Image (cartoon, rainbow, N blue to C red; front, side, top):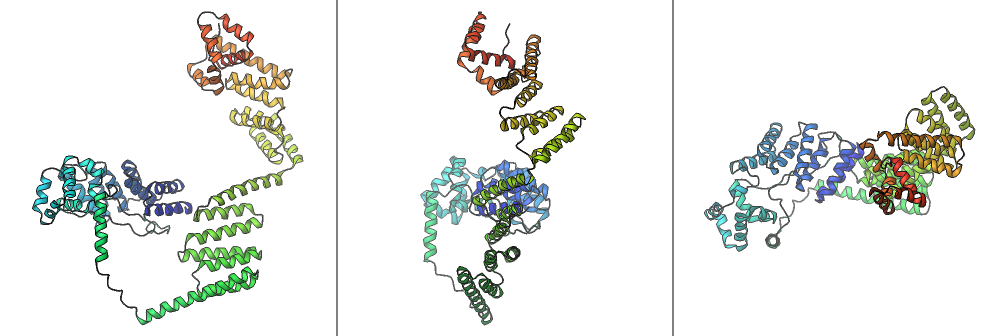
Length: 592
């Protein structure tokens, strides 16, 4: 849950900067980590709406309401998405359902009013049905709007709304303050957005609702136009000319005294800290600790002073005290809502302590907790490296060839008794004790075959071959597995590799003979289904053989009516022979 809340917090930061896609990515991470928090869906729905992905916004809004039916704002998410999708009846109902929960929610009230107005004016969201000749009539009859008619830019925009409303909205005409004023008159309401409550990371449902602004309003269509920028510049110039506001009321004597005392405490604490830093640089760590403690006594709200003490304890190799000090720093930072970086630094230092103690598992845990507070690619790489070291250390600690032989013998007895699952456990434990013994993998592969666990058996054969490329039994076992799966061309390939080591092994000769006979029976009986043929043709080796220009040429000539061409090519050109035999073994080519 902590990682999910951290992702949500990062998403809120991106939202504040209007980095919608990045915000969506972080909220998606939060949902993947914990999919039962309604606020994650609510926040992502708002981002989807901001990027005009209304179907996605609707889906998230519905999920939000499903998770928390008492969350009125969730109905606002649903209503807004439905409104933008033109589903006005459903949008109206969503807003009404939200108002049943929170009758004073202004956003829901405005959304409901927009739905009703759109339904009355022709059933199109966004006020499109209000465009037309009557628009000029409304403007000319209104004392305030009438004055805009002398502005040629305003006239052009109104004409564009009349002739092509969709293009006008895409070009940001609705962002013009004068056009907005016209719509306010037409709809009898003001456009604007209401913000959510401030962010709060408390795990209580009522305290960590979405920290995002509510749904975009009709004014949020696109970037400002050149004329709008000009209007905004004029407003800025006007603001500069306006008289400065009156100064804030004077502080009372008691307030002044309290503020001065606070400044003095902070200055005194900083003085002790600077003294501690000087002693730390001189490697007088115990004296530095005393100075940092004095700083904490004067200003106990600063996590930095506690972390400084932990740094000195680290240099003294007082590991337990350092861990306790870092934990106290985290507590101070959380209690006084300090920046997350202080918790990050504390967890990193605790990880460093455990790393010094050679307690790699604990170090990894602390470093991962630090990543929750703050992303750090270097720390991620460090964790990965430590995990590799931990694995190697565990392997080294477990390494015991004599015990491995004993476990192997026990596995063999269980195999003979047909207790295959128990035998696999013994072989697996033996592999932990001696992971370089290829015979252990071979024995386990044979046992996996008894349970028809072909993939596991194949992986063990490959590992045995990796450890000893001349271990012929592993190649034969691979061939037999492919034979059982009716992958006869792959079986022959495995046998061919075994023959390169020793072609006189009886088990190899018998296994190859069985596979060749199976191929002959299948080709003669026509048992090879179209589905099996298609699956075989997807094999990369089969595709490579079929796409070989020389093979294609020979096959085309053979199909033209002279089958002897194929036999001559197989006799005179060995590489053609190998590929044609592969196609025949795979079942995609039949002769005769």
